Length: 166
Image (cartoon, rainbow, N blue to C red; front, side, top):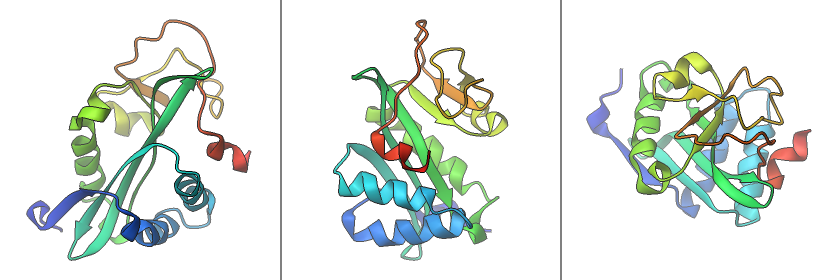
């Protein structure tokens, strides 16, 4: 079990891009989507808010937020991806990283959308979305948000880099 006081959460710097790619490969075995997504977002200089959790000089967890759109207008942020190295999973590290990110000013002032496990994300104040509609989850069964004031019905947009696997 890892001691939280030995972890450091830092903004992602370009020096750690390769470490994040390696982490994503380990955390999502059998999928290249997450690695390709993050690499394309970095290559295209998309605005992202990213943090890593470092333990003994190793990147053991990662979280990213990118713009969410209503048409061409930014309407919030998407949380994706979030990953923890397999040997550090189920120890609360992902939860600690998410709690940290949700306290950051740039995150606190936005609606945050996430496509994920409702049971996990509801512990952090996320609720299932009625609106907007997620293009990757048409019934919104796994699409959640926090601080969502949206009443209009629209399909939320993602950065174009999210669509390469579709």
